[in-house]
Length: 438
Ligand code: SF4
Ligand code: SF4
Figure 1 (cartoon, helix red, strand yellow):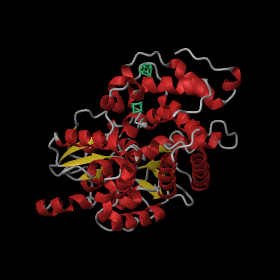
Figure 2: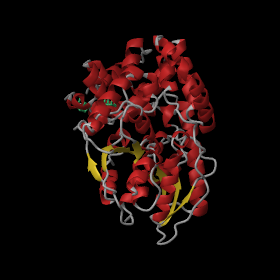
Figure 3: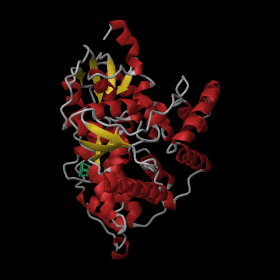
Figure 4: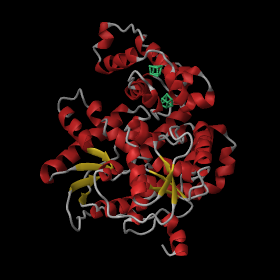
């Protein structure tokens, strides 16, 4: 695509990167076929190619983004299906990230949106605040039908729906643990923000599984949320503060005690941490260390793919595997989890439209609840058509989004791997385990 940026504009590194991305696009339109928002809305401006045009026009002309442009950019899920499809190697992720930051700097959103976005940025990255917010949300649940009648409050209703019906369980232990035998290395597990509050059993299963596979496990002291949630909202300052803090924390851990990997159980976080090196590429004090952290980051399924697990017992279960977009498109690493499940003895089924997002996408289901709900319903219908006993995924956002609608349990891949190799049954499958005695 031809561009017309001035040399002054291109002196800005972020603009220069975006210009290089835009120039790679050859307008072929292949990406339209796999874009979830284009699939649902049928509007070119809600497709990757349409958004590239909008961003190009906004950046080239240094325009204050209009509400229409903001709407089309906001509707993008950042699912990155377009990157998997694009034959020209357009790095849409870098472009949309730049556009989101530009919009946040240059546009004043309506008060209701500013309040909601501020609330999400204040609560979600902080497990203690999130735990309190869920407790309050449970109390507010009876008011949901009333709130649902007011369009303005639909995002609040989506937020309330995150609250589990049971009380939130205590956080899983952060104590370091060692491999009982055949030691392969030492890893730090990302502590996360939303996952340990909503599903602490995922961390517990991960630690058991890693120990059993020969890894000593630690949790780096001083770590904060990876920054992905605020990054998706274009909040650059908050993002970079979180990134620098974590680079400091993991570098200290690496240099003092040695680390073979930073293991991530939520693939949305993994995609973001693998991008730390890019985010801090212009920061001379951090660039090298950030790139090293990114190189160490591994989805738990990637690490385990290189590690022979003890023989598994799949217990006759059929599993519909939902590959999170962040894993299949963001990291191009979805195959590992499926192979691990099969090796552990499960019968894995792949749903139709496996490449299409479930609508969770970070804070998307809270900020764009209507589109997110349509995508979730479509995803759940495809998953349930496989007639599997259980749905497995590798990202907490997808697990919640799908779990709210699915009629079968939704678990993390590590919970099934842990169970098959000697750990306890996942809490959502304990009933089945006691019925079958397996
Ligand atoms: S990231 Fe996803 S929603 Fe956004 S343009 Fe690409 S395919 Fe469409
Ligand atoms: S597939 Fe790639 S090159 Fe083709 S229009 Fe989409 S982004 Fe541009």
